[in-house]
Every structure is written in C-alpha cells, then in structure tokens.
Length: 417
Image 1 (cartoon, rainbow, N blue to C red):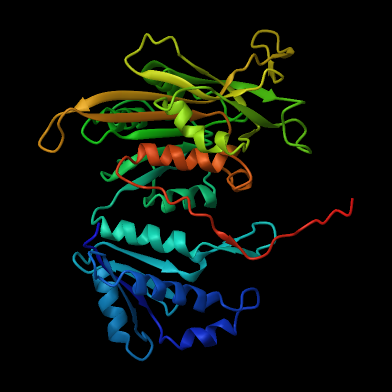
Image 2 (tube, rainbow, N blue to C red; image 1 turned 45 degrees about the horizontal axis):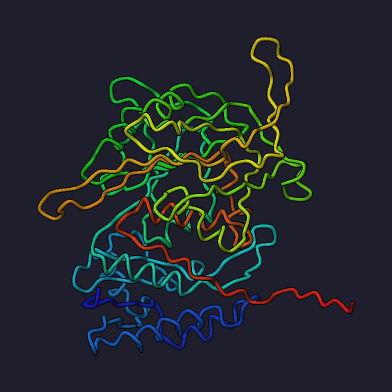
C-alpha cells in the first residue's frame, strides 16, 4: 500500500546499542546492524512522492517505564524488554509485531553460531503484515506427535503469516487461518460429533475464503486410517504406510540411499504442480526427500478436483515394505512413484467484491517429514523454493519474501590444478 504509516520503536536509547554490541562475541555489529537498517527504511520511506511512511523511534523503558506500559496496553503483550523492537501501524494500532534481535539472524543448529543476517526479510515481512491491517495465519496442528522445524516456521513468517498452533481435539481452527499444516503425525485424527476430521473438512469446505491444507508424512508414519480415508475420498491423495523409498543412484551421498532426490514433473505454467517447483527446477536445484514414503495420487481426472504430481521418484528408486499377509520383506521398483502431489479445487467467485474471478484451493501431500526440516530447507536444495511457492499459492492474499539472507563468511576452496 502506498499510504501505509508505520512506526518502528526500539526500547532503548539509540546510543545504547553501541554498548550492547560490546557484549556480543560473534558479530560486533549485532545490534547496530538492525538499528541502522531500520533507519535506512525510514530514509527511503519518508512519506513523500506517494511513498508510505516509516518512522523510527527510540524510547528508554528503564528510565521511562510508562512508555513500556503504553506499548503493552496497545499490543496486549505480557512483557516488553529493552531488546524488543515493535513495528506498529499508526492508523490502526492493533496491527503490530513485536520482534527480538535474534529474529534478524540465522543460527547454525549444530554449533549455535550465527552465520547470516536476515534483516531485510524480517523488517519487510513485518511491515507488510502491519500495513495490510488484517491478520492472516497458518495453523499448525498439534497433539498427534507432530513436529515443526524452525525454518519451516520462518518461511511462513516471511510469507507475512502469523504462526499459531491448534489442538483439534480441544480447539477450533482460528478464523483467520488460511492454511492448516499437519507435519509428521503419529496418532490418528478422530471422527464423530465435533471430531477432528469434521473440523478439517469444515475448514476446507468453506468456499468463502478457500482454505488449504499441507500434510507431511514419511516411512515412519503409521497407518492413520481416518486421515488417509479423508485425504483419498475428498482429495485423491494417499500414502502407503511403511513403503519406504530408497535410491542408490539418485540420493545424497552418506545418507545410506535414504535422502532421495526427486524428479520434477513436466507441466505448463498454468499447472499448480509445475508452479510449485518452477523456481527450483529452473535453477537446477534438487529437492530431497529423506526417509520418504510412497504416496499415490488419483490423476484420472474423474473427480471435481484436479490432482497432479509435482515431484516423482526417479526410475532408479525402489520401494521396500513388509507383505501384510506373510511379513516377508519385499523390495520392488518404485516405478516413478509420487513423492509430492497437490490437489486443486478451482471455481469462480461472484459477490460484492469479485466478478467471475478465479479462486483456488489446495491440498498438498508430501512423502517426507524431513522435507520441511531445517537440514533440507536451506538454499542448497529446492525444498525451500517449493515451500515458498506452496505458501504463496495457498495464502492467496499474501506475498512471500524469498529474499536471500546475507552470509557472514564463506569457506572457499582454491584448486591449484
């Protein structure tokens, strides 16, 4: 929006951040880099020439506790510290984001060491969220053994979505949620009055907002008959429990052939499956499915929805499973089985705000929980681009900020011959 009016508030005097830098060992400009970037936003977005306006403000909540009380009243947060940054819509104060300095950096899980700066991503995403003057969230299902990586949550945040958790056994899916995510469930979802499957079905049946669903399973995911039946009957997607996909020729080295490299499907620009992997495939970046399970997709075209496969296993892959009757361990060719598939419901909206406009709704099934893990959502693999594309498509009123973060240093190998 060209008329936005945003304030970025730091909760300490400006010069204090020079002192805070001396307390940090890894990055000597840890605090001032964020401060200076905020002031650069203020310089560019000064409200002139039709631009939006961003104002940077410094308050000292230690010497002026009343300022902290005022912020807490406006934002309804429990506590404010001197290292918080508040981004707020001045036109409508209820739209705000409270950030910490840690949010502006990336940390290596193995070492705990800071390795990159992602200030542009964080500031831009938060400004868009506040300027939009409406909240839109992604709901992460919990209560069934699900797990969600930090980088997956970051992708949602950078897509200007608020991340919330929902236990469908006890709660309703939030009204402002556009996407429901189920990642690595270990226990099935219930049927019955106010059952969990009914809540998911109602969520996807709401044709006023066109909600979407992401489901991640793998070779360790048990048979969840209620969830499987719903996905197959309603959306033409399913997984084959304990049917593990390996590939001796097309997998990451050192993974024991388990981190399977997928093969992108062909398709037109109008194909949802093609759009998901377009950026990764055009860049020549592989997508990786660790501990993958074989999935199936009803691509017969006999349904009211359009079912497509975005990523297949390579022809060299194999499926290993135990025979249901004999218990015998069986290995057979995977025959290019699907690893990631998406179902699309398409219709036209005609109401006070739309005239014959295209509306889409998606359900995506991924045959690897680790596909959305920190190790595989790095820029090295296509998983990151696919997740940004899927989020962008499902959150139809949002943009995704796939801005490259700035790595502090890179190891360079020089070859003499």
